[in-house]
Length: 164
Image 1 (tube, one colour):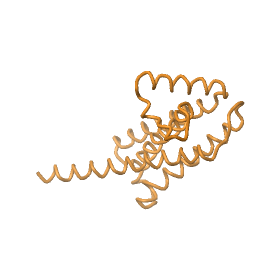
Image 2: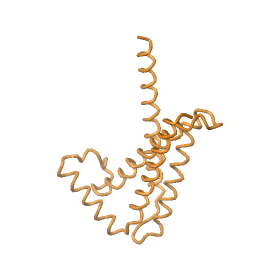
Image 3: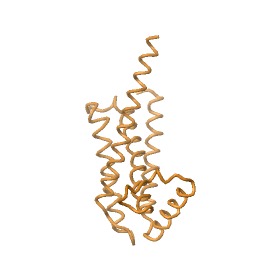
Image 4: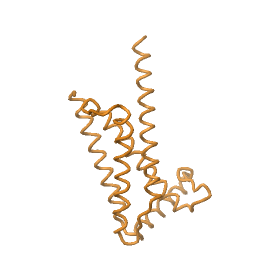
């Protein structure tokens, strides 16, 4: 493994750790504090005309939509980072590419989501919801697939440019 690849793996690993700490921090907020934050974010999005980032799809109120989309977006980022980390460490792994690039990051993100929800069970005014885990997993899967698509495009462009 090259020094450049090791440095990239350390950086991505630190980003993952920081994002997990941020998730844990938000999950540790008591219900009233968490609700106030959601209201502030929802109000800010409305003022800036960015409501389309958190559509309620006719099923959710604006504040609840902000909360559910926050799960999806943060786990999208976590999924992408975990997939990048696994790709960086691929030369060290005995796993096949599908397990390394897709299954391993998805299993990690699913475990993180489940632990996060379990943690919320013990926070006053918060709850442990299976649908939040499902939103987290869908967000992580989207991040993993986006990274795979970007990787494929990058390698395709690199191959075409080398052929010139």
